[in-house]
Structures are given as C-alpha cells and as structure tokens.
Amino acid sequence: MKYYLVGIKGSGMAALAGILEDDGNIVCGVDIDHEVFTEKELIKRQIKYDTFSNDLKIPEDIDFFVIGHDFMNHEIMKQIKATHKPYQEYHIFINSYFSSLYKIAICGTHGKTTTTGYFYYGLRNIVNTTMLRGDGTGVGGFQNNFFVFEACEYKDHFLVYHPNTIIITNIDYDHVDYFKTKRQYNSSFNKFVKNAKTVFVNYEDKNKIHHQNKITYGLDSNADYYIKNLDLKHGIKGDVYYQEEFITHLDVNIYGLYNATHLLALIAFLHHNNLDIKEALKNFNEIPCIKRRLQEKIIARDVFIDDYAHHPKEILASLNTLRLMYPSQRIVGIFKPDRYSRLVKFQKELKKALMCFDKAYVLPLYEKTTENTVLLKAKTRISYVNSLEQLIAEEKNEKDTVYLFMSSKNVDSWIYGLANSRE
Image (cartoon, rainbow, N blue to C red; front, side):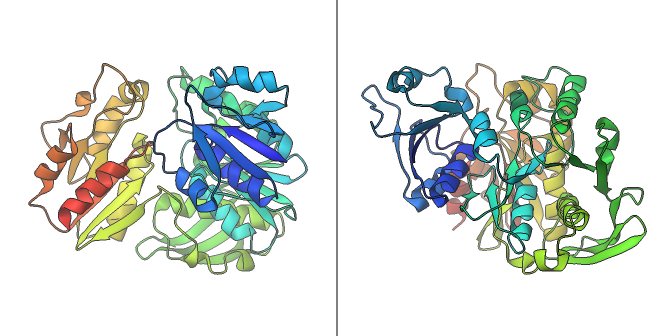
C-alpha cells in the first residue's frame, strides 16, 4: 500500500513512517517547512515528503492517509476528503493497524521514550518486536508479533489504545493547558488502564492507579519488583528481587536513578511473562543513545548535551544523572520553555530546579506569544539571554563545563552555535 502521512515530521509520525516502510509499504507525506530533529530519520530512509504550499498537490495513487493531531482542521483536509480515499487520525490508526500484535504501551509523564527504547532493545533479543518511539525512531517487520510503543496522555489521545500490557513510568501533573487539575490528569491514567489486562506501575504512584491486576516496581522493598544494593556511581548496579525471590544482578553502563527504574520495569515485565532476562539484557551496554535524551557532543574539555527535559522533575533528574557522570565539572543548565501555560504553572518549581545548577540560562519562549520567560530570572545563578551571541559572550571565559540544553523543542542552533564558538 502507499501511505501519505500529514505531519510526517512529528515524533510519532516519523516513527510510524519507518515502521510502515519496514512492513513493505510505500510512504510519503507533508509537513511544515521547519527543521525538526526527527526528519533526520526520514532523510536517512530516503522517505520523500513535501512542505505545505499553495500549489501542493496530493499524489493520485495514495491508498491511505494518516493525519497528525494538529492537522485535522488544516486546509489540506479538503483535498484529502475530495480523493474519497480512507483516512484516520494518527492515534486511531495506531490502534487499528497494530491490532493483531501483542501490544505494550509505555505511558507516564517522564521517561516514556527511554523506557520504550529499553523494552525494544531487550525484547528484540528474544522475540520479533516492532517499536514506535517518540524520538522519530520506528522499527517494523511483517514477521513481528510484539509491539512496544509510546502512549501519550496529552488531550487523552491514549484512551483509544487497547494494549495487552501498560507500563506506567510515573505520574506527575503536566500538560496544564489541557488538564486543568491534578485530579483530572490522574483520572485519565485510570481510564486508560481499564483498556489493558495487566498494568505495571512505578511504586511511587501505586495509589494513583486502581486495577485488579496491578504490579508494582520501584526502589522501595515493598514493591513487587525492587532493587537491593543499588549503586549509581559507576553506571547502574544492583540485585533485582521479586518479593523475596532474587531474580538477577544488574550491571550496565547507564547512569541515573530514573534509568534504574526504567530498566526495572523491563525486568519486571520479562520475569512476569517468563521471558529470558539474561538473553534480553545481553549487550545492553551497546544500545544506541535515545535521541535527545542526554545526547552528548564533546568539544575539547567541554561537553554539550541535548535533552528533552521540560518539566521540573525531569530537569532535576537529568542534572542528578550528570552529577554522577561528571562529578568534578561545572554544570550549566540552558532551558528553553515550550508552552507559556506550563511556564506559569510550574514557575516556582522550575526556578527551584534551575537554581541547583552551577549556572543556568533561560532562553526565549518557543511558543509564539507576547509573553516572555524573564519571570524565571533570579538574582543569582539564573540569567535570561535573548540571543546566541549573548550566551556565547556570557560563557566565553569558562572552561571544563558540561552544558545541558533542555527543551521539548529543537535547540540544535543554540547547541552547535555555542559548541562551535569553543572550538
């Protein structure tokens, strides 16, 4: 079949494009004329796509259209409807296209993309697995019988999915432009878990989820699955237990407390389903980096890191991980907010998190608005910068620094601009 993806550069849509191609289909599409990090996957696969323009014409030989959430009311829908060909919104298509596979939905406020990656790299060693990851990476194949994917709670899109198993990484109030209260936010996750037979929940959030087949995992020994003797100084080391039963020893060159719980979720799933843990974790130290999750670029003695963190807890988690990885270096946080609503709602928490860096800078707001980000400015440690040139000038005399760039949006120009100034 020939698929046409509207919004093909989207993090989920770009991943879907890769899966459809691996499944033997022809894929093309359209998106805005704006650089997005996910398009690198499309370029690597040589998947062709157009940009929106007044003379855009949809190919006549398209069999099916998949529409990104933001384009359901776009002008292009008139052309699509005029073709009289079938179309579906992205999340509805995901639910129908993968209906025959054993589905593992990874959801939660933070860590979805990383956990999805860990599940794929573990499962692929023991079972044929399709993956849809929220960094634009998708892997398919007709022979596959497992499907691990990111299920995003935003605007309740995940409620259409009916997976066999749900993994909940954590539940921290977010997407405040849609969910007006914590209660509404938590309620959506409880609605979602009704769609699955089995739910694995981070122990810290066990009381937020009600399900008859709820399995907990976490660092607390009261969880069903937990880690004893946890050592985070040299990667992640520890002993994994199911209740009082020793399961396996964990020793990987991956850093961070969050990553320890993400790996534990995978081990819990494997053990519960009688899958080979040792084989799944084989060569785990060699898995490729998840895009925009602590991605490193090293220039001389400085380190530049691109990270998706945009919530206060994510920011602190990334910083704590870097403190373990670079204990003797100066760490600078560079934060580019995405939505003004989130900025206002978490103003106090964001400022508190940024104050934990040796120095922090706040970049202009990504969202088009008359408002700005100076409300995060503080007398000490936090500064507002309006341009790349200003950031370069502020840091020109500093050395041996780890620069952590944090945003849910593309910040490549800031990263490479600062990095190139140090060469």
